[in-house]
Length: 532
Image 1: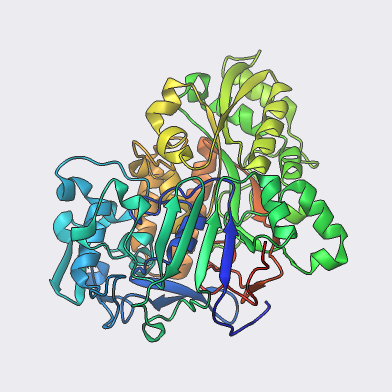
Image 2 (image 1 turned 45 degrees about the vertical axis):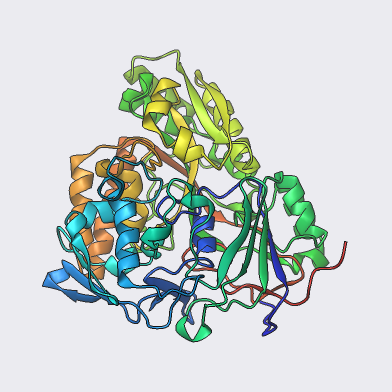
């Protein structure tokens, strides 16, 4: 939308909170993954195919992975001519170091270090020796077992090169070294970020990014309504979070034909859900968890996000965009979506809790729609005697210091955690593994928020990971979805559509088929921002 070849100007993002981390080893928010590609280049990337589906392309690597040993060995060759912001060449050794510091930080720093990013490389690599750089341009990954979709792992921020001599951990998150088209000019956490051009980036080496703007700014720590006002007033171009406008702005945008021309309403691949932690008080009983599911007023929670333009009621984990999605409804909440209270009370009886129980719900206040959905959830549960107190948090450290820290959750008796989820990469494994595999539970940055621990599910995930046949693979993801829902630790309530509004200056606006928001690697502006 709004195509342009204009080079120059300032692209202006705005965000309610901060990045979770700009350290590629320590990030798990989709908008950060989307944005961080402007600073660093993983081995593999994505572009959109003619049908809008994600297409794997080599990024820092000159080709997709060369696979041997039945899927146990993957080799990549770093492109020539790619340089860091100081002019030094990016080498295979920098990629190897980046993966080691993410997957095996104790090997790099000599002591255990908690990481907020995904744990796939630690899980699949054959230890620290499983990543090698035999020369300046070759990276070799040796796996414990075959992994059919390893190119998709190579597209994660984990493979963004990090020069060892400039690793300032734990402060690297404030000033990562650029291998992409932009470098950090200024970053005040919680306030502002400014990117300027990396003069050593060359367009001819990069099939993913267009790098048309001269500068990119991000205004941080702005309230949700103010984000919308800045966009509508032309003082910002894009909401960095990519999850849509507030309900009040949504109504105004959809009712005004002129404003509606700047609205996009795509399916995102995200699922809004909440997790029920099976280690917290009465929720250890599966019948108590099932009572929560059945008493959920999904219609009210959908309304909190803005109703039909924002999505549709979900009944399974896998979203419709992923192979393996098969519609089913393990916990029907009635034809109107408001809950099956009689069934919920029967489950409470089976749990020995006929009068209900008390728990706590964690939600992010800067994500106003999520907070309102949590309010609706608590009100729905109260109808069957489940009293749920809301606990407020901000987005920036939600997973690294609170909801994603099992010890914190247990200490504070948080039985339910609100969050949203999309595939780490476009595959059923990329959606399910981090939220359903017992081996993905981490001390911090945890995404298996219900602490689901099922040998059956773990075995299915392992089988699917090494299965090359796409139909067989999809059937396995369906089985994982059903098995996870039976455990009742996750309640998907909404398949997400975003009501996004782009400022009038935003150009080359396209949806990312991977991140469920605009593709930040190709955005630009048609004119410089007005003075004042």
